[in-house]
Structure formats: structure tokens, C-alpha cells
Image 1 (cartoon, helix red, strand yellow):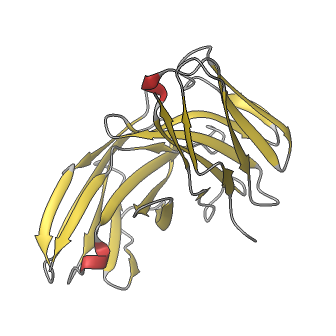
Image 2 (tube, one colour; image 1 turned 90 degrees about the horizontal axis):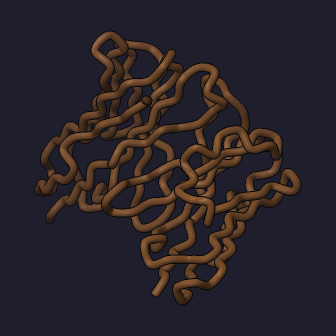
Length: 112
Length: 115
């Protein structure tokens, strides 16, 4: 059965800290891994990763995928209170009709 | 495009009542997904459609749950009869197609409370 496990489940840091969020997965015939940020309401898309070792970057956020070890990390540098959210990781397998399987999420709280 | 539109945003109902959640996907998207989010179980996939056809409903918890997509611009998720353990946030998401750069777009969710 396809599975996504995120760690830690929750994290409290202070502004300016750097955080690393982890996502490990098991999926039949991996196609892609996606990161989403969820504040009060709908998850919003951050990154899609398909190839090992290629970093995706957007401002202070970056992510990388290791297809051999079946995990991804999401880094946030110089955290701000606006980064407080639940960060969700999802995977998609080939020939699975586009469905995304999500992990439990990591709840990040950034204190001033 | 206004994005994925869900209604109602909040629903409070009594146990045993029928509940219908509605979703309008983004125009032109081939896939529509219904997810349920709770603190305990996170974001669970309930069912998804491709071109209005249900593909995988293995996540639907019980026969009390049913979903339809009569056309490309509308889907419903129905719970009959509702129970307190159905209380959760229900998200609808749509996706243009499979491929390298096709993420899923989520609606704002319906917060369901069954008392």
C-alpha cells in the first residue's frame, strides 16, 4: 500500500531559525512528489519533484528529492511568523490515475 | 478562473440527517478528488474522478458515503445518514492532467460538524 510519512509532526521555532521537514514514502512506480503549504484553509502548492538530486527553490524555501532512499526534505531558511502552517507532502505513482497520497503533515509554528 | 469552488463553507447538522457537499472544479481539469481532513488521520483521499467517471472509491469509508459527477463542472459528496464521526473538513481538488507540471488545486473546504 502506498504510504507517506512526515516528520516531525510538529515543530516550534523562533524567527530567523532554519528548519528542515522530512518526508519519506513508499509508492508503486514513483512519478512525482509534491509539497503543499496549508495555512487556515486550502493547501497551496509549493513544489513538484520528479528527479533525484535536483533542488527546487523559491525564495527562502527549497526542496530536494532522493529517489534511491525514498525521501524528500523541505528547507526553510530565516523563518518568519508567516511561515507558520501545516506543510503537506504527497506522492503520485505512475498509472495511478493522477491521485495524490498525502502524509500527516508537519505543523510548523514560528514564534517572534 | 475563480479556482475550485466548494459549498457550503460550513455545515452543522444533526446526526442522522443527510448532508450534501458540492464542488465546482476548475474549467478544463480532467481530474476531481474528494479528500477528508481530520487531526487524527490527516488528509485522506475518499474518491476521485477522471473525465466525470469514478476511478477509485476505495477510500470511501462506508456505504453511507456516495459521490457523483454528473458533468465536467459539478460534483457532489453525500453522506446519508450522517454521524458525529463524520465531522471533518472536506476538500475538493481538481487537476488538469497527469504530467510533469500538473499539481492539484484545492477548494477552500467544507467544515462539517455533525452533532
